[in-house]
Image (spheres, rainbow, N blue to C red):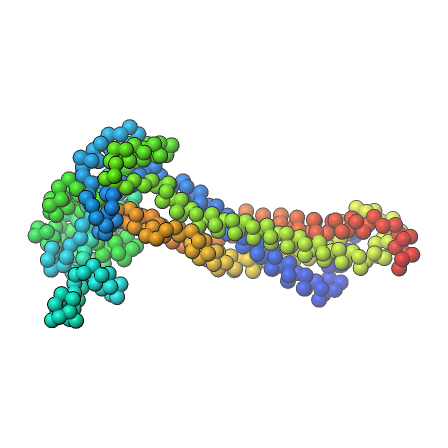
Length: 451
């Protein structure tokens, strides 16, 4: 007990030095805690993303990206051959189109073009007319089109990155039947005073509102979804498909089925796997993980060096005291233990302060790492527009990365506190035991003679 009490009292022999050491060491411990939290958060997110990779393949028409590009849509005949491939468990098809308010539908668009929409429309070469001719000075106001997506399986809506799709009123429709009904986004419904049971005009026909949905996305909430057979009939696109989602029976067969689909469709289609989309999301997470790991190691090393140099200075200052203790019979182990307790006292105080600082600093620093990771791993241009259909365009690329990174939050749990306590213990023992043991080896007579 005497060794412990002396070690604790010695920690406060020089208050100014103790305060300085505790402060500096606390910063190191806080940084180590923050990096540990970031590392665990990122590892958990990577594991979550990998577990949800799924076994899906996206097939879209070659040269077509949403409503841009050129070429021909896929057909149900093309895709029947894909559905017949071995290991294909399920295939769902979507068809995307857009309606012009006042021409194709009596609905009013809930989105306004703004500077971006008008600029893009001007570049497209239409929506510009007036006294000076088509490209004259007078311009008419461009009206945003209304997007519509046909699906043969309503669950595909959630599979295509409408993760928060909620039916706020009404009910779902039967996607396998030509019911002429639709699910309408909340913004579009509010703009046109629609509710379940209401009807609106589209393609010269009445379309019934089965329900209202909220996707958590303003663009998608300004659109509507209906059975693909209804959209094919109304838009005169029988047998046309914008995107097919192929579900493989096992992730192990993902690459082989992708190759088989490519062989079947040739240059008619672009084929991408969920693994490729997931890699785009994981890359910035791996960047953050690497930064966190090296920063954690650096913070732990810095803490150990700080306490090592501090205790080296302390034990050198107390050479005479050590000599006296050895002269009266103190063993090397007791002397070493005394300095370990002193270092442990300093480190525990720094650990408490560092934990508090780390708790409040964890998420701001993690957010800074997220910005760094996103900017270095967002992928090529247009990454968010590689899916093909109106909804698919938002399934990959930077949109998926951004949503994933925004979901990162550092959470302090019991396991983190246990790891922190162990780190404090290691720093204190390693940083103090070595210099204390080295100095305890001197002979009492040598110390007395030199002093």
